[in-house]
Length: 278
Image (cartoon, rainbow, N blue to C red; front, side, top):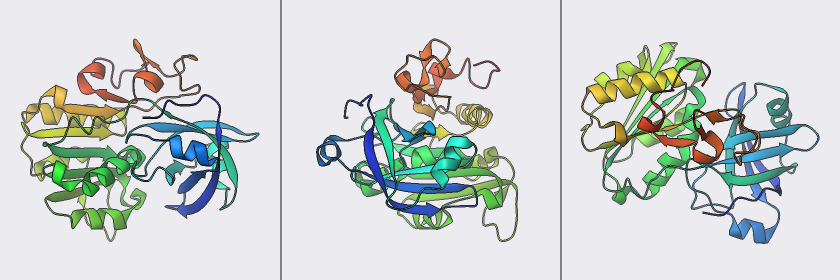
């Protein structure tokens, strides 16, 4: 893993994709050849993206680490800075520093079945995980992907889910609180999907990201079904402004999400997860 720089690299937008009315993806390439060669990341880490004269935001890297020259970030347009990023086009340049944080321990998970549980845009931090596993399929067992959204129209990457479902020893299940037509999944909270998921709790490592109440509810179901809490990993979202554990904005109990996370083992966070003020 590259030691993250605290000064931004220059990056150029080489591709842009509008995933939904409010969600878009930017593919970036570092303009400095030496920096591009040295840059490496692990799935689950994030970059700080800087828009000159506007501000800086933390965004998960969704591309595969085998292609570090093509850094893809999926962003929801929800505020002043993200709105600025939404107006970028191919050829525009931004600042990028990173990678930061602790990623998913995928090498430790080799030989195990994998379950991925995500809610809303929570899928973004695990897209690189799914790609990583599918490109190294022989190293892992069964892959189960559970995705929940508020409304069926919120689901992005529908084509990717269809392609993932075609892969060997892979199951994809979708749920929406509010369904629409056409909707290929179930209607209800994401926890309804556990009734249809085919997995061995003792053999399965779970990776989850999304709303904290969803994570907490899904973890409870897994533990009730026989999963060990140590086999559950989560990705946390917080207001990360410095990314080096200095500003305190992302403090979560005794840890800093930017430095000690964003990936945690579930027991590290379960006491504080979804509690107001943390």
